Image (cartoon, rainbow, N blue to C red; front, side, top):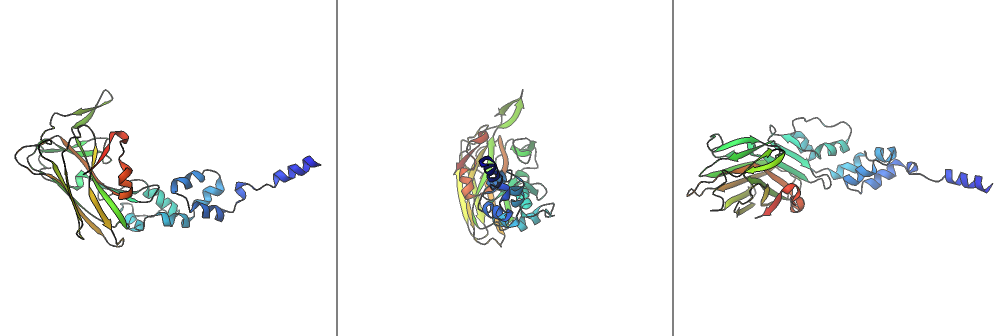
Length: 287
């Protein structure tokens, strides 16, 4: 008799599956996206609850509609805001594949990358000075490689609708041409010269008068370095922010060469501080 009563008691004990889906969704709404993804694997109830739109709308950047419209494929996923978040969490190309935009999976912060092919580089069409070389070390699969030049000038601009907040810009640069030999990474330093004589100059400006100027001696042979150019602040997320940036070394008393220009990266400043921590041999330099 006692055994039967105990058995009945065990059978009526509440299970995870018995929690109403709306309650699960409410709890999930307070968690970060990676935590939601982990809990969604528990069972079908958690998986279904994790798709509720009200969970994901606050986690999407306020300008996500603008971002979707920038992409080559402008069709919105038809399964809800969770699918939009998942799509934007991956790099998405726009402007002919010369730029990428994505959101940080944990914070939802908007991040961008601008290829060297989207920049104006003095002498880029003259192969005596510059070449575009293929490499799997760039998200764009190509970098601009400087053979030798007297006047180094790399300019770029961007017009984009950012969510409110502070953003940091980085130039991703490397001295030396890297290749693979017998499966090992090898850096050719043959053309590297002139960077120890005078510093390279970085400049950032916005249409509302924000600006940052910095300089650095380039000494990162065989290592990709993210040179922090400066920060800008967005106050009005409904307006387009116009940015101009440049890398110059225009002292014509000597030539310089052997520089790889990959891209310019833009991250929320809170992310930029912890981003390039020596993973994969890459470092960040605050100028």
